[in-house]
Length: 301
Image 1 (cartoon, rainbow, N blue to C red):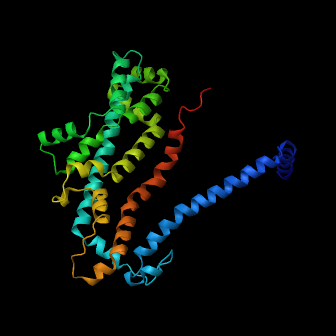
Image 2: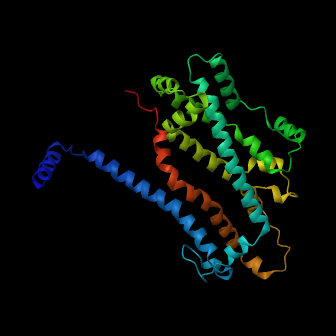
């Protein structure tokens, strides 16, 4: 065992390509840029975390270390009914949109990946045109009025389900599945639904995971549609992203509570931290599939 390790080390030394001076300089520049980028990203996050855990009276001195350590801001946020309603609305919207969008988009992409699908090119073109050119805000708003869904979280859910980009990802992935696998499943007695759910989806987990992750992050952080369809008088229907948007833009100080005035920045920081926790919890479980899904089909033999 030791001899084989020594042989491998000798081979590495023998075939190691020496870096030229320009390569070394370029490597140093890359490392410096990466370190600076990491610092620029991490420092603001650490500052927000420190603010959320600090006493408002010490805010001017807070950098990345909490001063007057306290969980009072978190307690206040979690006791706010409007926040809890917004959080629940975002959970509902994210779960429904993620499941419905990926189910419908993958089912739309599957027949389009087959050579015998009638009008395949025309249907694909229509999908792409709708992705590139929008009819605008007014038609969608009039549609929600006709459906009596304005000032309702379901308006945000319905408008977010359609995602043509996911159709294109699914289609390109389905094209890579050998037809022999599907033929063997049909010979064994599998119908179309069984074939799709039991054979196709497990074979395409990377692209499913990528699209699911994009759906989760996009829906959780989206506030544009909610801002358009839900007014400020119906706070019980707003998602968390809209709640944050309105909270951070609120400069109203008409309150006699000195603690709220003093700890306004701390409460905002605590709300921001709580709002990103769900996505951070999902990320580790899905990122290994996302990596392979993003590079799927990038190299052809």
